[in-house]
Amino acid sequence: MTFDRSFPDGFIWGTATASYQIEGAVAEDGRTPSIWDTFSRTPGKVFGGDTGDIACDHYHRMPEDVALMRSLGVDAYRFSVSWSRVLPDGTGRVNQQGLDFYSRLVDTLLDNGIRPFVTLYHWDLPQVLDDRGGWLTREVADWFTEYASLVSGALGDRVRNWTTLNEPWCSSFLSYSLGHHAPGHTDPLEGLVAAHHLLLAHGRGVRAIRDSAPGAEVSITLNPTQVYGPEDGDEADADAVRRADNIYNGVFFSPLFAGRYPDGFHDDTAHLSDHSYIGDGDLVEISTPLDNLGVNNYFPTRVRAARDGERGTPELAGMERVVGVEPRPPHTDMGWEVLPRGHYDILIRSAKESGLPIYITENGSAWPDVVSPDGRVHDPDRIAYLHGHLDAVADAIEDGADIRGYFAWSLLDNFEWAYGYSKRFGIVYVDYATQERIVKDSGWEYARIIREQR
Image (cartoon, rainbow, N blue to C red):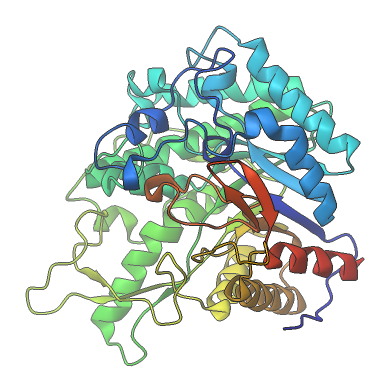
């Protein structure tokens, strides 16, 4: 397998992780529980009863992991901060030991020529704040603003790139309507409310970061998905695509970049709410201008209209008459459709919607990796996925999308949320019993691509 596309000068090649998925040390040096500590301990919520208690033990092995990144030649590393590690009570009291860990991480990255990209929220809300209402209360926007000010003030002298939220769709609809992620609620209205409060927190957080870290480049990372309907679909199918696109994409794109909710959204969801959770002036704050947009994308979404009394998707607001269509093969180990064309389409869409430079802040695939008798991890399917999706990136750039960088998900195999340790996304294999790291063939291929681009 070969890959010979070229990318613009200055294109950033990186890799990414998230705090709860890799750090471990959940009760060390002053950290308090997050909603994922609680959720993972709830029977039946996480495959195999797995937790992030140890994960990849990155909290103790951070220098080793940074050295591993340097060996791969990456330009940048995207990581997230554990809110409950730096603010154990969610607000107020600062845990200096927690802040010091991230300060050491930033310094170690810079010493190794790796640019830090900091994400403030990657789903691990402090449990004490969930106990006070979490993302369902407007107060959370102020809590987040305090947190954003603290971390950007502590690291902003060395960190230029900041992301407020990672995939707010997952922190709202997947977590409050579908119940698959912490805190595990199943209410279609709660998903709408949580999404709005996440966006409000983002808007206020952008201003807080700029106040605390002059010169910062501030972003949000969305996980938009290209929605496709039947090729021979009728008007009902077209309406199903519109409704699905609103709840998967428009509910974030439109408030962020147009200062309004998407066409049809209020009518589609009027049976659930009078939308009084949207306060005067909220959309002005939410649409505070950004410097760039992070895009996480792995797969497309296929839908059609419900027919003849079929059950749609009432768990998601406005999708009561929308039926999900099975992904087409080939599939990853997650059951996700592999479609580089979908990656291209959503990158073009994201560039058009935002009008901003884009970083692909996550893209990758899970496969059932094993260590071979030769001591290596051979993962040709991940390499093929990487090549196909980088081809799509190159095509999007040629067609006018201002894409500035690509971050492979993930650096390490890790705690894959509700799937526990049963799914492996890393370009580096982790033996969880021994914590040994083995660079997979895909990791070496990624390193080769980076080398050749230079």
